[in-house]
Length: 138
Image 1: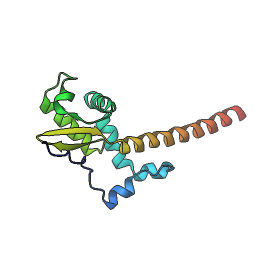
Image 2 (image 1 turned 180 degrees about the vertical axis):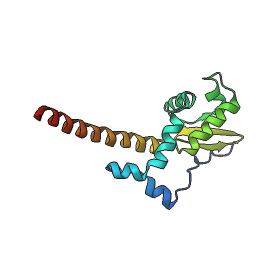
Image 3 (image 1 turned 90 degrees about the horizontal axis):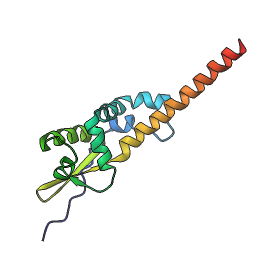
């Protein structure tokens, strides 16, 4: 009988992490406070290989290194390094099942990044609206 799988490891949350976390309705000041954490997420997602791994993990469930390696020409060691970068950014997490390590998406940081882009988009819309009104008035 195989042992029950452990729950995926969550990265520890410190007071600094809590301050950087982007509240659901944060405006531009919230983005500035959370910019360090968000920069790590965007940097991790900025690599095409890591972005493909995230896309594969979006299918749901937990995948082993062997399963994730089968979808790419990169070695297991290379995939593991990319997954560690994603884990450090809080985008994925792992769980140990016997001798295997299973990886899955942790959507919290991606949701924060998406919300920050929504806030920035709204701010740009307001700024462009003001510019348009100024140009049309002049």
